Length: 533
Image 1 (cartoon, rainbow, N blue to C red):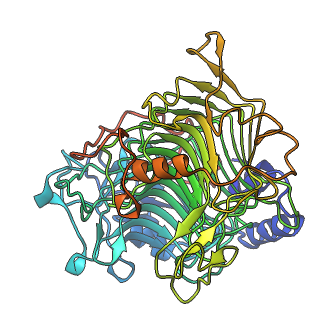
Image 2 (cartoon, helix red, strand yellow):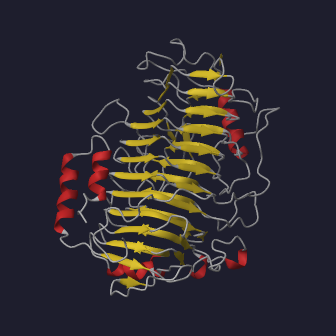
Image 3 (cartoon, rainbow, N blue to C red):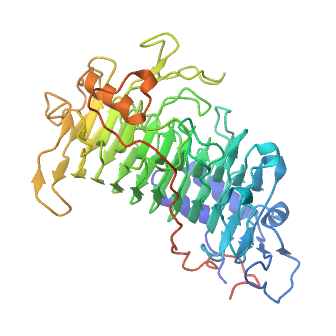
C-alpha cells in the first residue's frame, strides 16, 4: 500500500494562505515518524472482534492512545465504548501529538458517556447517566496536543456538572490561559449529541451537555468537516480564544437543536464557515466578544497584519428556522430567532448565504456590553471599560460587512425592528460602519423579489449603512436595543416593549439522532495493517 501524504499536510494545502513555515514544520514532523503503526481497538460489544490476534489490539480507546506514538493510528472496531480517564474528567484524553483516531463506521462506533447498555446506547433516562466523580461532569474526547485528528465516530451523553465540562469532542489548547497552546487539528465525519434533557428550569437546567465539537486556544490550521452536532445547551460548534489567529475552516457541517448552532468567542483571523447548515437552533451563528476566560478579546475578523481586510467569513450556508425556544439552554440565552448575530465583533463578513424563516432577524449586528466579572487574564482588551456605566466592558461592533445574501420570509415574529437585517451601536456614528449591500429578499424559495426589511430602514442606502463602507455608520437605535433585550429574555436589563412577543421556553426537547453518512473508505490512507483489506 502506498504511504499517503499525511492528513494534516493535506489539510494545510486545503486552507488557503497557511504559512509556509507551519506547513514545513508539519511535514518535517511527519517525516520524523518512520514506522507509523495501526493500533486496533475492539471490545466485541456489538460485533465480534477479528479472529486475527495481534499485539497491537486493545479493549479500550484510552489504552490504545496511551501506547500510541506520534504518527500512529488508533483504528476503532464497531462497538459501544464507555471510556474513562478520571484525571482529565474525560472519556478519552489524547496528550501526544500527531495521533490519529478513526472509527470504521460513524454510526456504529459510539463513545457513550452514559451508563446505558450495549443494546440501548446513549439513553435519556436520568438513572443511566454518568455525572463524573463528585458530580463534576465529564468530557468525551479531549485532545491537548497538536496534530491530533479524530474521524468517523459518534460521541454522546458527556454531561456537565459542578466543574463545568459537558464537551463531546474538544481540542483544548489551554482553556483559561489566554494563550494558544496547540497547532494543527482536524475532525471529519463526526457526530456529537446528547439525549439527556433532565427537567426544564427557567434559571438553567443542570447537567446538560454543553458543546458538541469544540476548539479553544488553538492556532490551527484546523478543519472540521462533514460533521453533525445537536442537542447542546450552549453551542453545537465552537471555535474560540484564538483572536485573529484561529486559522480554521468549518465546511459541510450541520448544527441543530442547540442554543447556538455556532459560537465563536474572541475568534477571528482566518476563520471560514462555509457550505454548512445551521437550522432549528435558538440562534443560528453568533461570533461574539466577551471579557472572560476565552481571552484575549475582542472577536476580530481581520486578517493577521491587516488594518481592515476581513478573513472571518460566513459564506454559502443555509441558515434556517433558528427560532426554537425549547432547545437545551444554560439560562443565559442568545437572541431567539436570529440567523446570524454579530455581538460586539468587528470586521466579519457574512456573504452569499440563504437565510430563511428567521422570526426575529436574518442578520443583526450590535455592540455588546459585558457585565460579567472578568478573570485575571481578561482586561476589556479591545473594548471600552466602564461604558456606558461603571463595571461594564462594551465591545463595539464595527467594520462588519453583510452582502450578497438571500433573505426569505424573515422577521415574521412581527415585533418592531424585526426583519431581514438590523444594526445598532451604543456609540454614535462608529467608523468604519457595519456595511450592508447587494442583499436581496424573496417571497419564497425561487420566488419573486420583495422589499428588504431592516432597522434602520433602507439599511443598504449610502445615506444609512450601505456603501461606501469606510464611512461612519448610524448610531443609537433604542427600539432595536429594547427588542434584542426582549429576544434574549434578559428582562433584568429592561422591560420588553409593550406588545412585544417572542417564543418562551417551557420544556426541553431533544431531537433523535439521524442515520448519517459514514466515511466512504475508512481504511484509505492508513499504513499497512492486518485489519484492513
